[in-house]
Amino acid sequence: MRTKMWIVDKNEQENHAYPQLEEAAKLLKEGETIAFPTETVYGLGADATSDRAVDKIFVAKGRPSDNPLIIHIGSKEAVEKIAKEIPSSAQALIDRFWPGPLTLVLKKRPGISEKVTAGLETVAVRMPSHPIALELLKKVDLPIAAPSANLSGKPSPTLAKHVWADLDGRISGIVDGGPTGVGVESTVLDCTEDTPLILRPGGVTKEQIEAVVGKVRVDKALLISGQAPKSPGMKYTHYAPNAPLYIVQGSRDFLQKKADEWRGQGKRVGILTTTENESFYQADVVLGCGSRDDLSTVATHLYEVLRSFNEHDLDIILSESFPEEGVGQAVMNRLMKAAGHQIILE
Ligand code: TXA
Ligand code: MG
Image 1 (cartoon, rainbow, N blue to C red):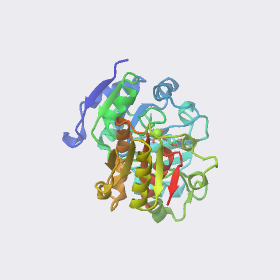
Image 2: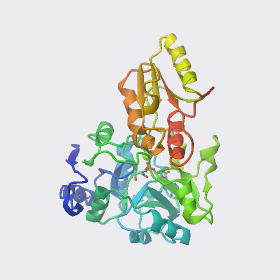
Image 3: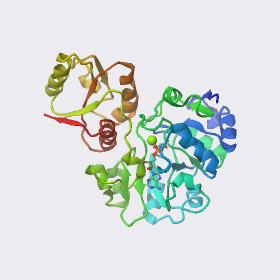
Image 4: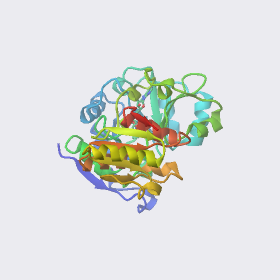
């Protein structure tokens, strides 16, 4: 299949009407798959009410069918057509964080494809804040199922060229709206029990959620390895670059010493650091990923940097580690997954 590409400048459209989106919207209505930017990462969308359309997402990504998808909606009110009950805490979070990077898991209504929810009684739903995503959802006027637009297991795409690299020839089109922004996926929050439960840390932090609804819990599988995660997607290996990745917990000197040891054995070593420390290290490739002073900048560039390591023929990658506070929780969660939980302690 030929994959079309539309280039849309999110800033330069009058009234955010984006006429280039007409064809993409038409193809979505016809049951085709279209990748589009959201404020977190690029999503691969299809009509959430059609089994046939949703199937195409799983085929294009090579995604296991027991891993349910997030439904994207273009207005807060549309959640009532998808979820059966909206607890008051969920409503308060909708009022505060939508549109934005927070996905709520709620009890589902009939009418949504079983393929979207992988047979579960619950459904994950969010209203993205990216102006192109919102306009596309408005033009289509259907709930759109959209996982991240990468091949299953690869880092999520934060640029259209990442989608192109993974899915060219496998999907009907890509809306190129430039870099996404937040860089890590939405926070997934289960609101079906009395105390909300974070299933995946993401763009909205635990602290921000607690400021609205009080105490929230965090899925134990995110904290202790070896337990089955409640969010089906969290059990898969993800984001891994081609070379094995290790997270180093210790000083810069210790990380440099480890790099020197590997290089002494003739290995090609990459280092993942931040702009502050880029000139400190010596290795075959040193990539800075945002600034330690503002972890949201690390989140923005993390997947791009993980993908960039694959352009160099490396034997091993060593990464600095980050404090698990605020968006640092999402950053460390994704890094740990990319590293298959391999840590080197000083
Ligand atoms: O930021 C995002 O959320 C991006 C953009 C495109 O919106 N989407 C995204 O989708 O990350 P995906 O499919 O890559 O991740 C969806 C996550 C998975 O971990 C999945 O298991 C979980 O949400 N999920 C979906 N439905 C669920 C449900 N009913 N119960 C529990 N977890 C669910
Ligand atoms: Mg994904």
